[in-house]
Length: 289
Image 1 (tube, rainbow, N blue to C red):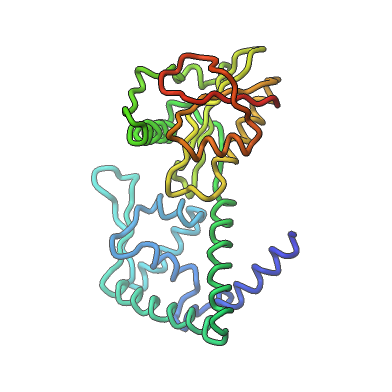
Image 2: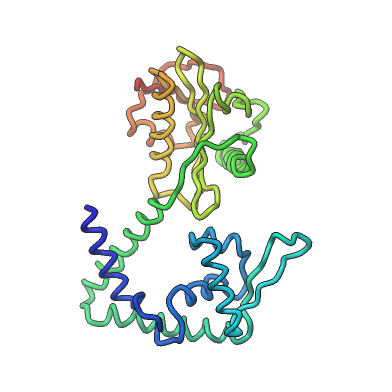
């Protein structure tokens, strides 16, 4: 499988011209052209740009300095915070991006043109699947303090979605608690999934000694659904439970969350009688690890 991935990488980099110092017949390599395109007409926070492209800060700084010397980009402090810098395209830079877009369209057309209609459809469909799987492989999952801004963001979005989807809305104050302490070691933990530095999902585990552990706060951002992230978070939480010598994990969920119910059943959870008095729950599940 590793050989196949490497062979694919070689084929793609050669076919799109990534090996040339003058990408798309312009006087700069692919890296500089990609940074120009990512900055875009609205500009970009340099830190977010670095996270999105997964570039070393020193390397990105060198790329930006080269583009500044060419008169294509300007980098300045943003507002009152001297630590925040924003990169913007100059008028010349906007013209260059327009040329790059046209050349990129021409390159894409040259890849499709030799193929018949059926081959084109298969290639584009395969590209979509490869892109989805590559994005999935980029997601990072780690234990995060529930007080961290990324954790707070996920839980707020989770509550907001429950409020939208539940027929009677959702009030966290009425729900059984899963507070910061119960989701912090040694009483539990919270996993946060991130893509290019942005939080896109979470899942919590409450530990109760020799008693069954509870899964809480399972949420995936709508933009990241279809990547298998829910199943990955669930597997990671189960692994964490097993490492803490947990034999059984439990969870409860609302009937409106049909995707979650399907996920739990597919992952081997079986429905059991209610084991708590969660007012928003209609289904209770259990799995022996």
